[in-house]
Length: 277
Image (cartoon, rainbow, N blue to C red; front, side, top):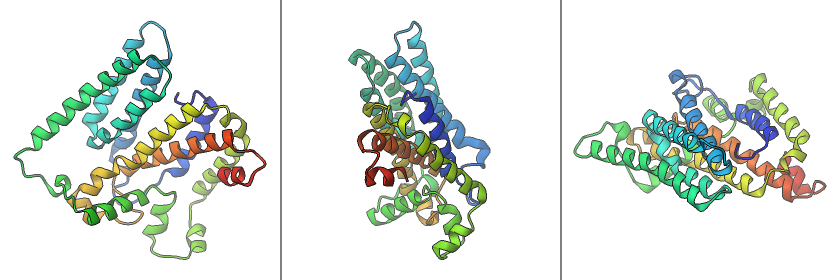
């Protein structure tokens, strides 16, 4: 819905599947009763409702926005890191075409439950001794390295390669599952075959997708980096649950970058070929 391109949606699915990983340690993909997937589905429904509200003039679109606010609220209650994705929604609202009045309504409607949620969390935590998981430690050096380690888990194949210890690159690649290699090859084929469709996506929509993806990629990891517990447990390539959002964010960033490359770079140029690869 963000790009208004059904073909880019197909490519997005393959890129996302190529980014997904499983691990024995706090697996966000298959573990926890698909908690992370249900949370992200709610957020994506909210994003679709925002796009529909701003770009459609049909009757009942306020109810569509209201349903998006409900799904956003449910996502907030389901997993606390969702609050870090609010800036991306605000950027999306102001990047989409639509009247300023409608944009203010959408921002206000999403801002109310977010503000109530943050107020409730701060009041709940005040005067209470939290566990190590929810104890904040803001030492810059420790927080920075934890944040980078958390992001490292979003790199494709990182969980497989790092969890097996340091190996030569050729050895690590040779041990990758055939399904992942197949998905990667299929994604490359789709990119080449759909390059003309990617060029049709508007710059505004591509940039909106890029901002949303960047927020998914960089936002949720902040809470992990600030946690005393995860500062001692997160390792290279083995990130905590919120890395699931980074998988989605990396897919969004990749597809939006491909759209921009296909639109502005000449097909015969070396930059275009490198971008597609």
